[in-house]
Image (cartoon, one colour):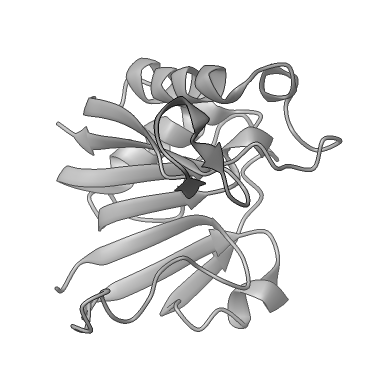
Length: 175
């Protein structure tokens, strides 16, 4: 409750819900969206404010937020399109408060013509290592870097087949 969240690479929808799975209100103080399309950002009901910015426009990325502005950052289904990921992660660290969390979600579903080459030639395990490396080597002071498979699966054991799109997350804490 009372947290400020940055939805990085936001769009017309967010994976931020006003209530938790048990029905309790999340009571977030602020949900800021940063994305590339003003109409889509304006249509996103989860956002309390939004900014249009192309993170690929310049290698000298500077997020338009003060230091230590957010308790959590979400980057959902867009890490594969960033051409300056280390710079974006370093800026994410700058605007994240100490002890804040970052969660980077990704799938193997993408626009092949828009994704960076490093991503298109790799599998899901490579993607998790790549995202973890972005956090480790951006000089942002991230700790507790972890990857998790969030995919819905059916059956058990070695026959656990993914149902629908696969989904993975790499999380870290700003030290």
